[in-house]
Image (cartoon, rainbow, N blue to C red):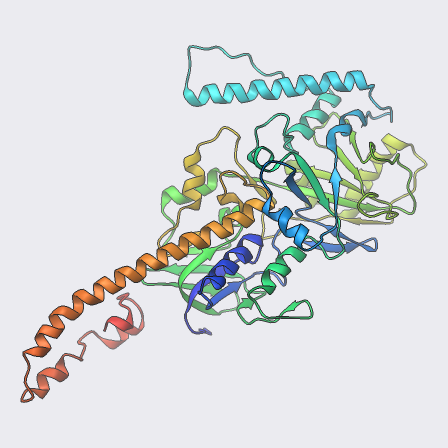
Length: 496
């Protein structure tokens, strides 16, 4: 195995949490950091791709939580880079609900269905809270179950898009309820490159620093009390004092990375308890626009008897004027189903839905782009999803370090899991926690060395020049050399 020299910290994953963690470490004096990224780029689930002559965001696309009492840190980064964004107003979507015959539901019916869905969601939350405190003396009304196509569609947009009107989401409470779509040709990941420029050597927009290693798929992490060894798929061995693991919760739940020794049971059980959301934005390019457009028409909904079946649509004209691009968002089961079939089959399904809404004479799409986050072994999903009423201990256990392995990412953020700013803030928090542990370790070593030196100094003072053999024996070690070199004793060389 190729074994580069030992570094202070290895960071596994160059998404926003990994880059944020590395930046803090380097700026606070820990410069011998190595970042191992499995893919050929930085960004993780922030990823752009050219489609229909514009740059579209396959993963994270919005800056959620803007306009409140506190400033969203990702919004601040976007402002510093003059990142182009567009305000997304979802409030009109409920009045653009199409049935399978192409008729828009009257606004009164839509409003009543929406109110019913909100009331049901609130009732469900109350029931969950009551179950948490185990108040069996109260009988709670069961929430109504969505049955009709319009009820299923509204239930989908309420829960799968985490509308703030229903659930007290920390992002909206702390940072504000406005959301902005990133529509910059440089891409959402431009924010990560700007962060990287602060501590990594770059040239003409490319990162050339040897501390960032791309296409390095980590398959095993060996950890002892004295250090860690990270083994990659291409047979390289990287050694460090600590590891920050900045991979997704989906990867932690998969068998991509083996731990030696294995993670303790409480840790692995907490990881398994976290739900993984799969969120798929399918992009369709057309020769011309045939759908209604305007400020109140950006979002529209298709009501089908199957929940989540090509339900939520977005006209991308405000983001990319004249692009003639529509986006339809699928989640979870529908996402996994579509990922498993051909793009041609998906295009056929999507066109069938559009012809239901806008008639049989609309043109065929000229191109389609289907991201596959679930089948990507470096992601295994889009983001973590904890229940609104959940056990805080689960998040704490997922975040808790195991010896010299520290965990970071949006899934370790109790308040902002699932969001870009959750990943960013968790990276900063984890690096600060690691720096504190490094400071404590330095203190422990200093105390240990003082305790070792005292008897040695006393012994040395009692020796005379007529005892050269005794002095030389102090520097000999009867530990078999092979055992020490193999690391089986776990004794740092500096102590010998």
